[in-house]
Structures are given as structure tokens and as C-alpha cells.
Amino acid sequence: MRIPHLYPPARQVSIPTGRHSTGRPGVRDHHCGGPGPGWRALCVTGAAAAPTLGSVSFAAADGQQEETRTVRGTLPPGSPDFVYVPVEVPAGVREIKVSATYERPPVPAGAQGNALDLGLFDQHGTELGGRGFRGWSGGARTEFFVRADDATPGYLPGPVGAGTWHIALGPYTVAPQGLAYELTITLTYGEPGRTARPVYPPERATGRGRAWYRGDCHLHSWHSDGRRTPAEIAALARAAGLDFINTSEHNTHSAHRHWAKQAGDDLLIMLGEEVTTRNGHLVALGTDPGTFVDWRYRAGDNRFGRFARQIRASGGLVVPAHPHATCIGCGWKFGFGEADAVEVWNGPYTPDDEVALAAWDAQLVASVRENRRWLPAMGNSDAHRAPDVVGLPQTVVLADDLTRPAVLDGIRAGRCYVAESKNVTMAFTATGERGRQAGIGERLDVDADTPVTVRLEVSGAPRCTVRFVTDEGVLLTSDPLPVSGSGSVEWRTTPSYAAYVRAELRHEAAAGPVPGAPASFTNPIFLGHR
Image 1 (cartoon, one colour):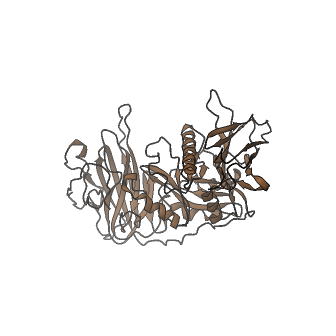
Image 2 (image 1 turned 45 degrees about the vertical axis):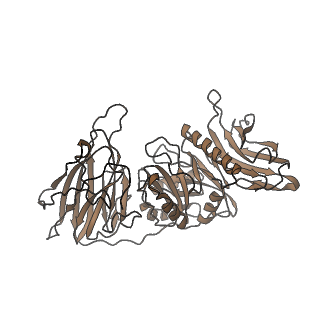
Image 3 (image 1 turned 180 degrees about the horizontal axis):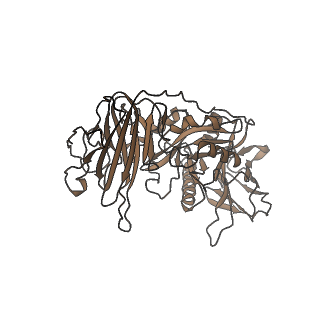
């Protein structure tokens, strides 16, 4: 697959491939000439398929237990997002192990330093779609191993088949001096172990029928760049009062087989992935077990739709994550036409969440005025390690039962609100003539001039202020709730005055006209005929 990013054209360069002694690591330098100093270290062969560096060859076992090769090279500024180091793996290999180091020189003020991601593809190749995918650790690890019976977290156990494997290098950021790296590749020979058949969590937990269920759908364990085990995350989820969670490791589904023991009658565990591209991140939420979603594309490549469809075909939802985050590569550039929901609140509330909330509300306004599909909002913790709080925030979903399909249906329909903790509850309704009523994510289908009563009942939000937000803006702001945190607020309107109403609970503001951070907010109730 040719990666069509706008980089200088690669020159095809051959690299000597002499055999190295097995008594000490062999060392090969990936140094080549090029059109300028920035390209002198980037050797790309097979440019019509993928940016590929010179290959690393190993001899047959010949009675040896272990064989090591070391390669060095430098990636210049402006390198492709991903380049590949081919490794020729002979038959009889039990384990492949890779370790990496790279230089981190000081950089001028305002420039980015070096950061290198790592991954692995097996003899099935690097074609987009991931048939050969064997693991990804991004920048979270500097070494990994793969064998039939085990693998480093983030990687998939399985046989080490003969053929051309590829170490994936992802230069996330490159210093002006370039990114000088060293890879040490070790093959261990011998009889392979047995690959266990994966066991996945059940799709159902013991629910309460149609009810409100609390969940956190963006979490990281040590299978990507988190520091917690699945057992630790499950314990924290239960302590946070959650009914369901969704796994979402960066660019790998390796954790799917490690969650079955953590599920129970009281906790539904759904499986997914955080698809971490260079143009934004998305949560593949509630996909079928074992689903891998590729991430090696940018918005200009016009490939995102293919993988959004794959997520939905596997039973999941497409949820852009932290769309206005300011970290490199985190801002969402793919548009929302393929999205099923959007993560508006990510972890402790920060200014980029406020921007995301305002942008989402602007999308709501456009959807009602253009009579098109609207996009439900979610909130998730994105917790990685202490002191990150699992369940801050959480999405509270009205679902027919505590099952994967029912929870996803509730999120897709927007029958949900976002709360900072299990302590906050909201009951939000709109009532018209003859007692006709609609709740969060629903439509009260009445005539334009029909009086409508909007009512919010709250608990667990001491001294918070209620705001009713419509397509015309904030049309009601209440007095602060009492210190008990419980209360109710009513407002009367008509569909001709407000095409939708949503509710926010805001903490006291520190100063000035800027509102305080939310304790909770709802998806809208739509008013009037469609």
C-alpha cells in the first residue's frame, strides 16, 4: 500500500545484506545518500508499496539457540508517518524479540523533540487492514516479544511463521537533527508453544430491565500506554458505580482476550479500540471480540470511511474522541459524517472540553435548522494511571437491558446524559398537551405553538446552577441548588421558540462571566414536528 502523504519523493536505494556473525550482534547502518541533508539517512525501497528500509536477514537455525542482529539509522524531519524494517525470519523460530533505543537531542525553543512509536507485522504483510498485524505499543514501550504461547501486552501471541516480518516505526515527532535509532532483533529457535484459544467477556450482565445504566467507554490498561491491569480497572469501575465499561487500547485489540475474568453479573465489559491516527483519535465502541481497526491513514487519504464502516459492521459505534484536544495528532480532522456519537467531555473538565461542548451545540443547531441527523454526546474518563479517575466523567444510558446491543442502541439514539460521578442523577422531561411526554434523546411531536413544560429533577449536585440551553442559546439559568444537592427546575416554552432543549448542571464559577465546570449535561429533547 502506497502511503500518499505529501513528503519528498523517495529514492530507491539498495543496501548490502551481508550475513553477520552469530557470536556477537550484527550491526547494519541504514545510511543512504539523497536529494538533501534531510534525506541522507532515510533509505526507502519498494516505494510503490510502503516506505521500507533495508531488510535484516537471519541464517537458518543450524543448531543455534539464539541469533541477534542490530540495525541503526536516522529518520529525517518530514519522514512518512510509518516506515517499515523488513526482517527475514527463517523456519524454526520460537520467539521474536525487538528492542529499540533512539536519541533525544536538545532542540531549540518551540521545536519538537524526538518520539518514536513501535509495532510489528508478521509474514502476512503490512497491507492496510491489518491481516499481518501482530501488535502495537506506540511510544509506551521500548521492547517487545512475540511467540505462540505469549506476547508483550499490546501484541498478539501466535506462531512465528517463516517469511518477511516488518518492524513498524512511527516517528511521532522528529527533532531538527533527525531521529537516530537503534533496533536489536533477537530470534530464539526451538519448538513453538501452544496458542490458547481466546475467551472473551459475555455480552450480557444482570440488568434491571429498561433502566439507566452508567458506563465509561474510554479506558487504557497496560496493553497500551496505561499502567493499570484489567483487574485494577474493573475494581475501580465497580467502585465508581459503573454498570459497563468499554476497553479502548491505542491501535491494538490485544487486550480483548484478557478481560473475560473481570466481567461479572454486575459489570458488562464491551470491547473496542482507540484508533489513534495522526489526524485525530476515535473510540471504536463495543465491537465484536477480536476486531482490529487500522489507523495508518490521514484525513486527506480518503480511507477513513472504510474503517468506520468496518466498526459498524462489527456491531460497534464510531465515536471521535476529545475532538478539540491540543496534543499533537489529537485534534479531529475527519469530519463527523461517519460518526455515531462524539466524546464531548474527556477526563477532568478543561478548556478544550468547553470548546468541544460549544462545537457540539453548534452542530445541534445546524441539524435542526437543516433537518438532518444529529450527533449524540458522550463523556468518558480516558483514564490511564493514578491519579486518573475511572468514571470521571461517565455516560448514563437509558437501555432496555444491560447488554451490549441495548447499551449501544441507547447511545446511538442519544438516550443518555453525562455526569461527573455516580452521585449525580438527572431526570429530564418535556411535557405537552394531554400529558404527552418525551425524555432525553427523544422528540415531543406537538404543534409549533403548543405550550411545553420542561422539567429537570436533580440530585447529587450541591450549589450547582441549572441551565436550559436551546438552539437560541441559554434561555434559563436557575439559582444555585441547595447544599443538599437536590432540587427541580421547570420552564415553559413552545416548539416555535425552542427547537430543542438540553440541560446543564454547572458548578460555581471561579470568577467572571465564564460558567463553572459542568457536573452533568444531557443530550437534547427535540420539540415540535420533524
